[in-house]
Image (cartoon, rainbow, N blue to C red; front, side):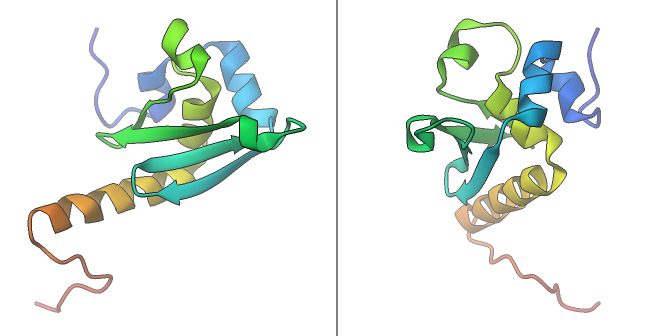
Length: 115
């Protein structure tokens, strides 16, 4: 069965219930960077040792270099944490669109010209 691209990101990422719970309650910090979203888990004593770059592809958190994303089925808690925080995911999607426009030689503007 195919899931429509307009489906909620969680339907497309198919996280386990455990992963979803952890993505909700752990103290994640997010930083928008050129390559995607830097996700830092501030729940740990040394958060800088628990920092991963989540890439965005086709509007979804696509990949994460953490061990869980590489070795387990379904999305990791870092990808899910981005997906469930609408403002973070939207900011990453918008940044991706701007980079794509710039790569095509177009300039993105906050206020498009009036018709």
